[in-house]
Length: 309
Image 1: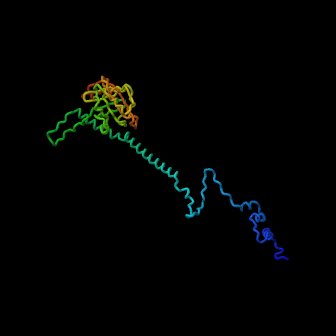
Image 2: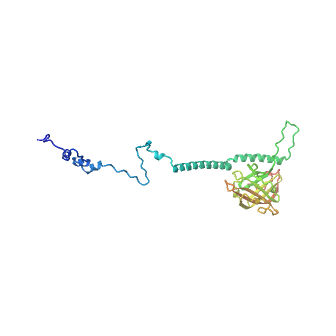
Image 3: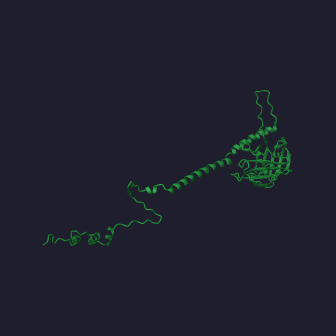
């Protein structure tokens, strides 16, 4: 009787004995002979198929790969700069610089329009005091006593006061239209007529909050007043126009007709257009309609009712 007879023999052992010592029994066969074994066990033994990425997705290996130069980082391909990434970085940096520059320019423009209002008002107050002093005492003689200071001499080049009652505004007008002249005040074009004279009394001013900011709101028949030491002059608006900076004929004795001989007393106001820019000029033309003597003994020196706000 063979050794081990009577002992139970497993199905796997019987299969090995039947196949011989050199045979290799696959996992599927063993699984098939295993009690309770089935096709699911055979499939579990097979290697899993690689996962196919969806369209637009990128599969990143979790383990580093060994190369001739050593192990390659898992994220090396993702973090390595490319031509596209360098271009995007350059565009992003340029955009940030341009945004910063734009903010600086915007802040500067805002200051020029709104932030220097206090400086303009302060300068206008000083000019008004000097103008009143000049009109009250036009001659300032030196004193005999060197220890006593003479009154401050009035500033040269003050033309008078300009009034726009519609805006409840008035300014001391200086003589000159250079940047330093009109920094804090409207300026008279020196080659044009004086207030009340036949010709074109022309004034330039900045388009800032304290000066000619609202000039575009003037309409036909609106009043513009001018005060000098001798007279009040009442002008009424008859035209507004927008021109290019080179069109200087707007301040000619007859606006728009440089060679024509003037027959009327006119007033022209010029300023930049549009607001926050200067590639155009806004022009306001007015015509003299009344002249009233200035009388220092009267309230408001005899200011005409049309000029009062």
